[in-house]
Image 1 (cartoon, rainbow, N blue to C red):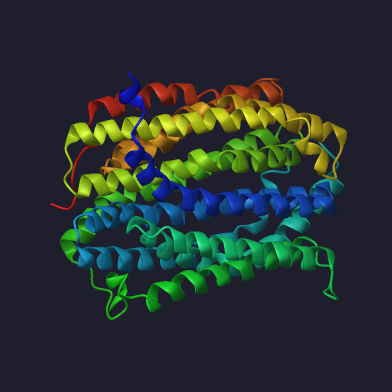
Image 2 (cartoon, helix red, strand yellow; image 1 turned 90 degrees about the vertical axis):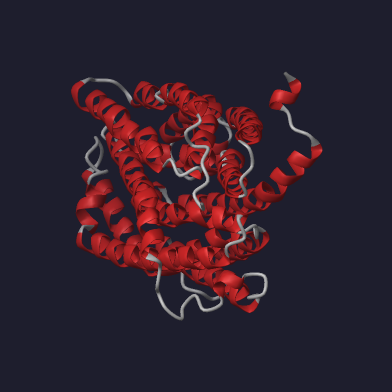
Length: 460
């Protein structure tokens, strides 16, 4: 039983070699995002709410970029595992073209539907003047953040490809540099230090945009300057040719992944909108609890990426099904254990964390309860996350589409919409019931893993 769920030292060295750089990068990124959130929160509850709403909407764009890049990334990891650099080059080109097109589309959508989208979250009970203030701050923040779409998309292309080919340190370093640039500029631009103008939420947006250009410069610059370590980058922009057979395979396998990220993220946005109908205090409270959840979930979310990369490389190199299953089982144990540990830490600080925000006692109390609910669900979140990346590593993107976004729109969204519109239920039971739907996903995920259809080599 011990050897079934616990690996040897060589196994954990491999896992840590992939996971630790991702954990460090995501950990620093989320910690600085927390500080960024706290700085905006010091300006006041209304600016914090405006920024929170916009970031929730931008989350949809961010996950679309992630989904588009990850669809081709399945092939990148397996091509790298089989030593096919030409295949890696083709997948890089595909990522570049798709992510650039999504950037143009994303900017167009947000510029055309700016006010209606933000207004969806301002329908709860509260002062109309407060709602108008949230709208104004949100628009000012959004217009600057649009300038960061392109560097974010291209950084994702480069960083994702580097990780999938075994280079995790450079994306980590680029991310660390970027977040410290963001943090420093936040301090200067939000509050007007060192002679700079006091820009508030606009300063926070400008700092984020600048940091994204810095991250792109680091990760792209290193990739091109070290072409011997990254032979796929040589001639990658000489043409945009991708063989039709591979293009067809990436689209067939990758489009469900892109659609999954789009539908799942929009489902999350709809769910948040349903929560917001319970009152204007819900927006800042969910922002506070969500910020701590992002920080607490760094390890298990990063482990999900590590699971996808390691499984993809093992499948691409032709390792046996039993060995793949054994490694996957042990990786999931690590992920769930991280969820238990950090869920416990979240619960322990649930009453203290909201105190660092410049907001009302009612918002702080609500945030504390929501943090506790998230903490209880974190081990289950970690299991479903690891399951998702496992299924994706073997090209089961249609299955992950059904597992993730279809579940969101068939179960979670109707449940949140029905309870918020047709009952008098409060935000706390509503939030708990919607969060508990992950228990169902755990059962479905375990069944899918046991079937083993995800164990396939896509490079042959």
